[in-house]
Image (cartoon, rainbow, N blue to C red; front, side, top):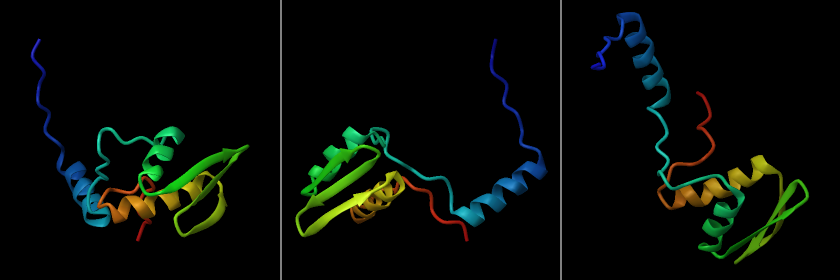
Length: 97
C-alpha cells in the first residue's frame, strides 16, 4: 500500500502562512538536547555553572554568579540565556507578539 500525498486546502494554507508570519517558524532544537535535569547540569557545567536540586527548587552557582534559588520556570529562563549566547534555540517558547 503506497502512501498518498494529500493537498492542503487553501483555508488551511492561509492559516499556516499567517502562523509563520506571526511566529517566524517552528523552533529548531538540536536532536540531542533535552530538558532533563542531568543534561542541564552537564550543559551548565560546561559554562562553569553548578546546578543542584533542593526539594522542588534548583540552585545555581559558579563563576561570577551569586548563588540563586530558582523554580523550574526560572531554571529554564536561566539556561536559555546560555543557549542563546551559544547560538542555540531556547527551550522556552518565544513570547507571543
